[in-house]
Image 1 (cartoon, one colour):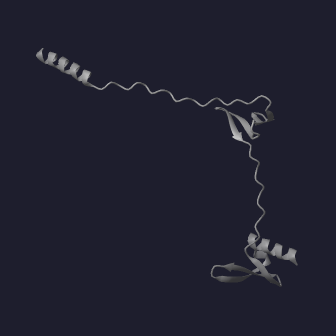
Image 2 (image 1 turned 90 degrees about the vertical axis):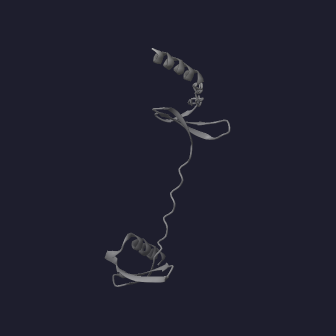
Length: 131
């Protein structure tokens, strides 16, 4: 019995000495819900386009998580195809002589017309257009 009383007294003293628990943290404010503005142009099902007061165009898209607003960016035009890094020097009886500048100097090679890869074929087409 003495042990029980000692444990209860000692336990209550420890409970009083324990630091108080932290209060629950405040929930973070949620961002304002995005809504499709009135007068928005419907582009397709679930997609709208609208212009804000500053004149910037926005796309509003309906997703499973709500409506999202994205800047309306025009697609960039495709870059022009690069000219071939190799060039045709001459053509002889079904063979083409190519050359390319490298960091170690100029490299020259010969290829039959049936064995050309895409880069060599592009260089040959450019050479024919110039002639």
